[in-house]
Image 1 (cartoon, rainbow over the protein chains, first blue to last red):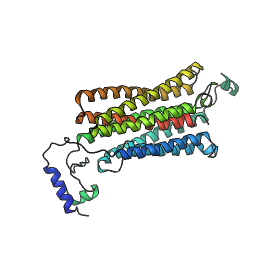
Image 2 (cartoon, rainbow over the protein chains, first blue to last red):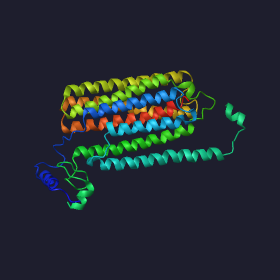
Image 3 (cartoon, chains in turn green, brown):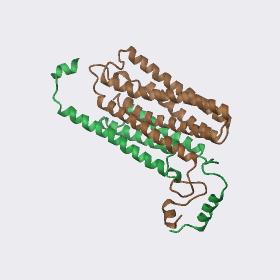
Image 4 (spheres, helix red, strand yellow):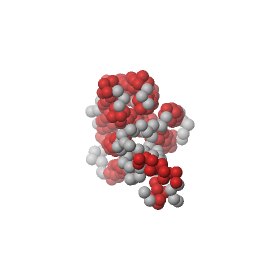
Length: 135
Length: 211
C-alpha cells in the first residue's frame, strides 16, 4: 500500500516546522473521560473480587483461578486506562518493553513455584512429621 | 521514507515521532516516559521475586497464625479504595497540569496525598495489630515473607508521598513548565504502577489468604 498524498504532505509539513526536536511537546495524553472510565472498570472488578472472595458464588477449589482472572483483568484496565499503554504509534516501544517484563515475571514466578514444589516433594523430611508440625 | 516502511508503520502525523526514524526524533516527553517505564518494569520484576517467595512460603506458618486468623478484609477493602481513588486523582491532577489548570492540579494532588497517607495509616495499624498479637515478621517464614512483600509496597508508597510533596514544591517554585510536567508524568506513572502491584498483592495475599 502506498502512502496517500495527504499523509506525505503532512510529513513534510512536520519537518518544516521551525523548532528543535523534543521541544513544544504538548501532546494531550488522553482525556479526563478515559481516566473516569478506567476508575469505573477498576471499581467494578475490585468489588467483584471482594464479593467472590467472601461469598460462595464460585466452586471453592476454583476460587483462586477466578480471583486471578479478575486481578489480571484489573491490571489490564490499569495499564490501558491509567498508564495508557495502548496501540498508539508512540507506544510501540512501551508495549515491547511490557511484553519483555511480563516474560521475565512469568519465568521468575512460575519457575520458582515449579522448582520449590519439586524440592518440597522430593526432599526427605529431616524430622518425624509430628515434630515438624509442632515446633 | 519509503512507501513500504510507511505502510508497516502506519501514517506519520506531524510531530508524532515513534522512535523508528519516521517523523524525526521522538519528543522528550516520549523518551522520558519510556525510560521511566523501563524502570517501573524492573521494579515490578523485583516485586515478582517477593511474590514468588511469598507464594512458596505461604504454608510455612511454623505452628503460628495463618492468613485466615490474621487478615481482615474490611481493612484491605479500605486500603484498596484509598489507593484506587488516589491513582485516579493523581491521573486527573497530571492531566490538569498539562492543561495548565493550576487549581485543579493542586486540589487533585492534595487529595492524592491524603488518600496515600490514609492507605499508609491503615497499613501501619494492621502491622501494629499483628505485631501486638505476637505475629511479627520473626514468628514464621510465612510472616517474614508477608512483611517483606507488603512492607516493601508500603515503603514505595511512602517514597511516593515524599516525591509528591517535592514535586508540588517544584510546581510552586517553577510553575507548570515542560520539565515540571515531565516529572509529574513520571510520578503519575509510578503511582499507577504501585496500584497495579497492589491489585496483585490484595488478590494473592489477602483474598486468597483468607480462604
